[in-house]
Image (cartoon, rainbow, N blue to C red; front, side, top):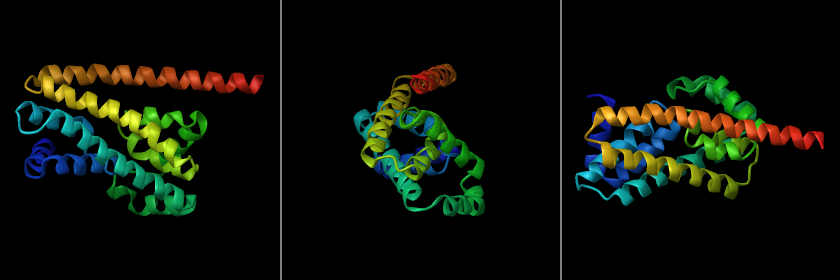
Length: 203
């Protein structure tokens, strides 16, 4: 059984709870990607087995619960403890200390808005919550930015599966193109934030 078949079987058995659980795992275990989970859930909804709105809500809840958990891990434990944990157990989660360091640098360099953008970037969404907690970002602000990014990304993925799930070739083409769009948007947004930061320093 491949990953897609396993994901579909979980959703068939657990319904919305299964979607929430899978999206929770997506945020703490990167090899289980939302790019498979939510389109599969959207396609299932198109077959009348689930409601599209329910699929989106379940996906958002699972993602945000995971984001909150990772935030508090970053908030409650000091830097050394987190890096020791990642060094020892990160290989089981496909996470390395360097990944956490890069996310922390991104957060410190570009500020709180990176949380919003990070929710739509594979791998980054699994890590950005920890630096947010480590940096003592206000929890309400973290959840606000996380919710915005999560709702946009989860809705997009579910709708792709709902409307194009039967055409796998077209769906893959959409994902390949949107990947470039997201990267471009992120680069432009980060460049703008960096420009604003440098401009304020020079004032």
